[in-house]
Length: 412
Figure 1: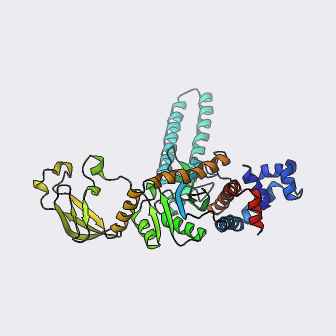
Figure 2: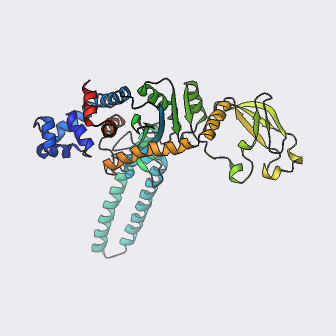
Figure 3: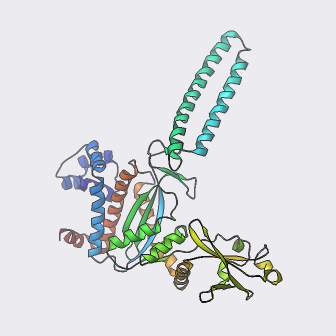
């Protein structure tokens, strides 16, 4: 059964019904299965009931690639991409969407009631027919409202205040377009041969909390002590970067530009030079910003610095519209400064990231046919994604080593 699935995913055939047909007419598949022709239910049930084993096969192939020294550089690019789930947007509800749907139904009911009042003034025969039709529409809308009330109860009980009816684990996610209801698939891709070292299917819309877990997983799969990980600015989070530093993982993540001062053409925080020995900043005008106090914001210890000479400064208009320019510094900001220094000395890392991690996502989505996952719930979707990753890695390994060398290594 696993042969059928591997053959199918290698040849862009993921549907159990299509695999059933191929097993009856495809000579290659007949040879692989010894002319066994399971029906689509048996094929689908195998994927459903053996998810853990299928995911283990995907990991074992990564181990094989590691033994063949395909991950020699120990540098990975980390990224995430949104994949559609078997759940239409109309069957996904948030508080705002539910409120809007209820408001539309109430508006329609009010409009039909007004139409019934108008119908009463017409000929009795015509009025009766129109009134019955409008009453049926109102009854249907009230039934929809009762269904929405039940969904509202589920919504209030959900931890993330979101409910999907077809696939309960799928979540509404922002994209560059109109957004999708689906999953956020995280991958760590080897920069040398562009093979997927590790992957995880999540239903978290944002990437900021995924850096440490993906980097550690990649290091484990590659069986190395030191690892370098590259990610885009969507992964920039101070706590995650610190956790990677403490784990001995060197990361390259560009800082997103969120400062209103920089956006308005004023001096940014990077224009203020920190002196570790005196614990103070030096501003572009040469003034000292000394430590004033420390506080805790969102669980992080932050120190505040400012100068008393801002009012007399000739550069004040280019610095701050307020009475004085204040600079905040996290207690572990030296880790962030060190990462930025590495990035400044190796700007090509961002180009390497783009060339590495975006290609596998595009390839897999092309194989899928720009459609949605075929299975439901995060566990089964993870199994389906593992089959995609296994097929992708096998094709890459065949291209690098040749089919005979790969078969020999697999038999060893």
